[in-house]
Image 1 (cartoon, rainbow, N blue to C red):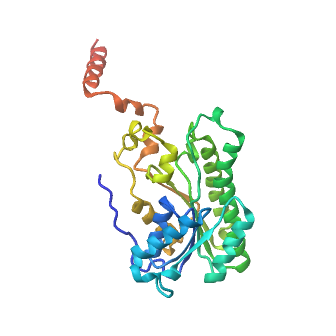
Image 2 (image 1 turned 180 degrees about the vertical axis):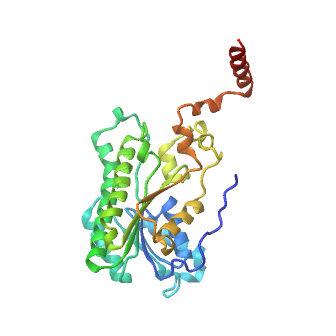
Image 3 (image 1 turned 135 degrees about the vertical axis):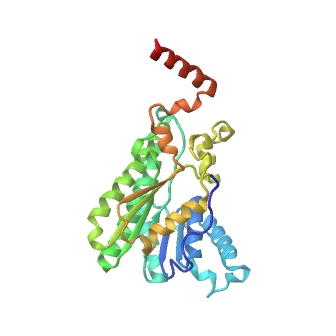
Length: 304
């Protein structure tokens, strides 16, 4: 099945929304930020690398608003670059106050910043394990608590969208720190959806399957591993995801159209985790000729 990569929501669907996207300088964060901007939102993108943010900002402004949009009053006032290490509470607080000073409000927070690498767990140092937990779980906690406290104290509604993964609920070998951290983020999503619902704050999550991004996939599958492990064979639809497909879903979940969706995790993976979950799914590899032989054997036993 070919991907459908047209924008989903109507023009202006996020008009006047102020959205923070952590890890917004590249990959899926960039794709989501671009679509939010297309729909009329003002977007604050954050990461530890300011140069990457500024480069992304210039690219998005040119792509969306044209080369003359670098002047104030056009595309330039739609995007804000804030260097922020989400592991550091003071930097997260500063990021929040910077957005409020610039735009006066925050409508949605997308916790997208992450880190991951493949390794046998026994080869990991304790600090390597901690680095993933700190970025993914502690970073999400910091941003959620900082922005959430603002919403509660200001008595304004808010929306949090967390980017998790399908192994948040199944676990996965060789990415154990990420699995632990993402499971914690999913638990936080569901827990606060109930606890903070009374403040009109919604929590949802997206669990993406394979959506290749150069940075993340180069770290996960370095060298020629990408050729050896064909991800499309793990997906029933026999393809990987397109960034616009995830951006469409993210935009819906931070928009008012999804105002009655709370505490949900939406999987967008072409059926990958289901194919890997079934006890006998490995039988996919059996050739047709062998199935013919097995069928003949079964019939012979039945008639015997």
